[in-house]
Amino acid sequence: MSRSFRLGLFILTTLAILAVCVFLVGRQESKFGANYRVRTEFANVAGLSEGADVRVGGTRKGTVRSITLPKTSDGKVTVTMDLAKETQAIVKQDSVASIQAEGLLGDKYVEISFGSVEGARLKGGETIESEPPFDMSDLFAKASQLLDTGQGALESIQGATDNIELITGKINSGKGTIGKLVNDTTLYKQAAAGVTSLHDDADALKQNFLLRGFFKNRGYANPVEITENQISQLPAGPALKSFVFNPNSLFDKSDSAKLKNEKSLNAAGQYLQGQAFGLAVISVSTGDRGDSDKAHVLSEARGFVVRKYLVDSFPLDDTRLKTLAVGKSAAAGADGSIEILIYGAPKEPTKAPRIVR
Image 1 (cartoon, helix red, strand yellow):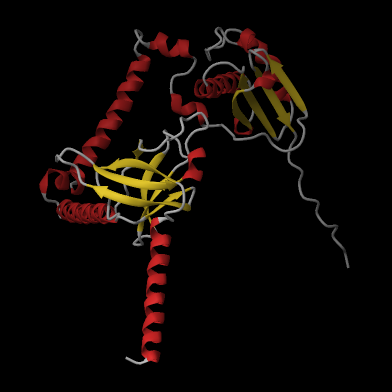
Image 2 (cartoon, helix red, strand yellow; image 1 turned 180 degrees about the horizontal axis):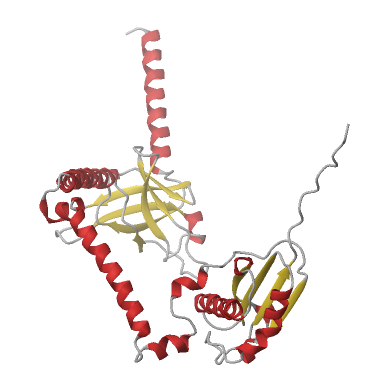
C-alpha cells in the first residue's frame, strides 16, 4: 500500500468522522450543553418521530429524545424531550405542548408555549399538558363527508324540483282537485256571487234598526267610502283662507269620528258657498299618542264626516272639496287639529295679444 493511498484513506476517514459529529451535534444537541428533560402525552403523535425538533417561541430549543407507546390500550403515547436550560425561565409547569408541521405536509415538530409569569418553574422530569395534534387525514375525511352530504342535498333538491314540475303540469292540465279548482271558472263565479251577496247582506244590516246604532256611533257606515275624495298632499303655495277646529269640541270622543257640534262648521260652509275657490282641503291630524295605523284611519274617518256634513248642508261644488289624512303629528298638539284650507282658483294661462293686420 503506497504512501499516497494511505494518506488519502486517512483524509476520507477524518472527513467522515467530522460529518458524523456535525450531524449528531446538530440533531441531538451538544453533549457539552446544559439540558433538562420534559415529558408530555398525546393520544396520537400524528407522524412525529424521535430526533424531531422541539421549538419554544418558534425557535429550535430542544430535541425529541424518545417516543414510548402506552402499556395498555387506554393509555397515551409518552414523548420525552430534552430542552436547553435557557428555556427554564419561560417554559413553566402550565406550558402546553402541541405537534405542528412545516407547511401542510412537512416534517413534524413539537411546539411548547410560554408559561404564565406566576407559573412554577420546571426542575426536570415533569410532565406538561398537551393539545391534540391536527391531522390532515382527518381534514380530508371530513371534507369527503361534506362533499357526500352536499351531493345528497343536490340530489334531493333535484328530486323536489321534478316533483314540483309534475304537480304543476297536472294542475295546468286540470287533473286532481286543485287542477279542477284552478281551471274551472264555475268556482270563481260562485265566489264572486258570494262576495256580492255579502255586500248586500252588509247593506241590509246597516238598515236594520238593531244594528243601525253601531254604525251611527262609529261616525260612518262604509270604511271604503272614507278615502274616495282623499288627496296625498296639500297644494303648493299658501292658502287664501283657513278655518281651524279643536277635535275635542267637534267630536264626541277622542277616538271617534261622530260629530257632536257640527254647527261649528257652518262658518266654513257659508264661506265656501259664497266664494269662488279652486280647491278646499280638510286636513285632519291626531295627537302624538297611540297607534300610528289607528290614528291614520281616524284621520280619514274624521275628514270624511266633516266633508259629508258640508256637502249635505251647503250648496257648493263638492268636486273641489277634498280630504287629507295626516295621522299622528306632534306639531298638531296633544289632541290634534282639523283645518279647512281654501285655495284660490288656478290662474289661466295668459293669452298673447292678437295683432290685427
